[in-house]
Image 1: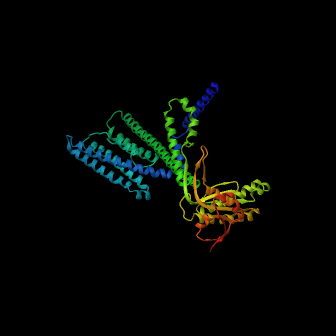
Image 2 (image 1 turned 60 degrees about the vertical axis):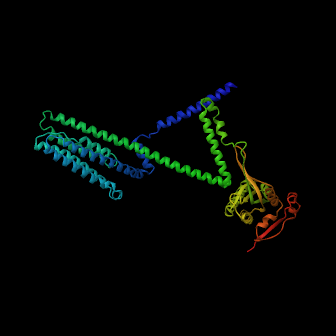
Image 3 (image 1 turned 90 degrees about the vertical axis):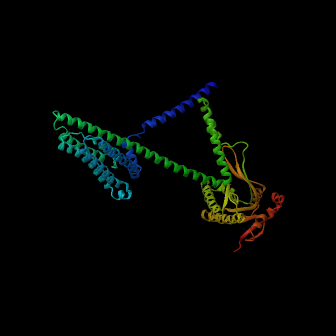
Length: 504
């Protein structure tokens, strides 16, 4: 006994461990951090255009940060120049920095007009190139000015800053366009360095090579930043899209579940059942968290999963309903058909018939309870209060007789309908544990059943209680002789009638 138990426990552990290993291997095999895979996935899902719109909004945010940094750096640098001992050249530098910062602000501000950018996409590239060109011209121009006026050789100040701004803040999309702009800026600074900075140095080529390596490294860092940012943003975008899609699917599934539940149960019982199921699931989760021992958790796992579906023994989902009408319908000659007709044809005929009945039930606001073989019974006024519940059931009965005759002519079958209708009070609810069953109970349900059994073929057999609720809208005649002799109907003093037709 113990060996069997240990082997079972070992099998459970191996299965659980194997599932974790399989999930881990699946995670390792996924290429969700490869840039080419993410781009291909966006294109396959036809999300590239949505991703571009998403990135456009983000780039506007980055651009706002850059404009703030640019103005802050520009005015801070201009104020620092006031501390210089020689203010003659400082005023020129200050004016250049301030004017450059304002120009960059004005040029890049065109990107904040989304409607204009959406119509003229080239403005993104034009404004970025112009802003970067002004930054480079200001930086190199001041170096040339100082070298020619006072023979003061200065290193460029904003070379790395300009390159980082291209890759991090400029609203140029993708990677190729920033790389082209960064390469152009790098060439400009190398030319400036070779003609101005190293003009008086002996080891000129060595200095130019060092500067080229430095600026190339900055470009490589910028490309790496762009690539990593695009990977992170594409991953976030796809995850967010998947989350939204799953959330919508979950809502749709819940709506479908609710619709399906309400097609079977009244809203009051459905609400109580759903609330009870939620409470049992929460209790099951809390109990599961409190189990510290792994073996106990595995051994009780299947039992815990079953327990949430089982209602508490002391809980009954029963609702009383007053003033409802019950309809019982039975297919006449069904037993003979089961012995003479092919099973497939019989099932197809019943399916065709009951589908028509379900459609008619919805039209007349009558709730179908169930069908057992050839028996179909339903109730009006149960799911929602309805003053015309008796009329709805009688109209449905007349419609069912018409439908079964249509099926009889269509499929050449010798079948007809016998229908019993009675009004009164019922109890409705759900019974069972693992498999729930909704049903109705009361003496009035039994009376409706007896009215059907003692009725006439092709007629709607109603009780006096139902007829009283019809307000004289139908022609009728006395019920059948079998009904007058039925012990159940005699016991409850039920007088029956046969509906002939609706008064026009």
